[in-house]
Length: 193
Ligand SMILES: [Zn+2]
Image (tube, rainbow, N blue to C red; front, side, top):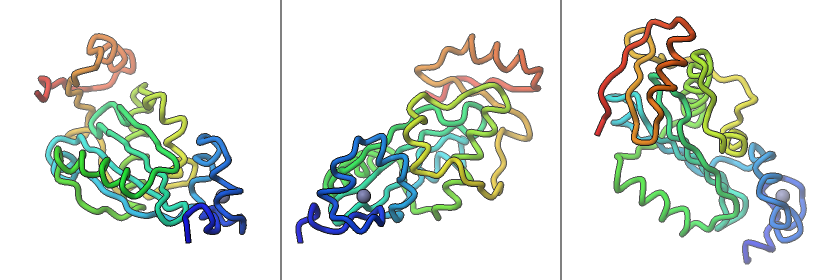
């Protein structure tokens, strides 16, 4: 059966063609928790070694249509530095996106709840320092259920304090001044590359 004639993954009981296919992307994202997780991947090496990582979360709407969100996180300081969410992409489009990340990082499967603990924990840690997530978090937060509690199982910061590692599109002066204004004991490291 063509995907558009399948019953919509949101659980409405209506065919996809007459349900979420017709809705604006923002509306579908807001109910994204209704769609079951397709897969969850993380750039594992970057996470373990540098506290920087990229997480990829996808959900199935119908066969061959997915929701996908990407979160670039800094566990040492800034939280979600970059993020975006896509709605109604085909499996092929998703695989191409995933392939692009796999070319740059070693992406490994991660448990969805662990992924939530990592991304949402990074957001909360950064907020405690005065940093809000990237503005596109407004949409992508729903894919990872930001409103639901998560298990605090990871440590943030490096050796118990924030470590700011300068990225290519940062404004280091502003970031350091935010860290200073919060009276945090923090460290600064040279840019990664
Ligand atoms: Zn629907």
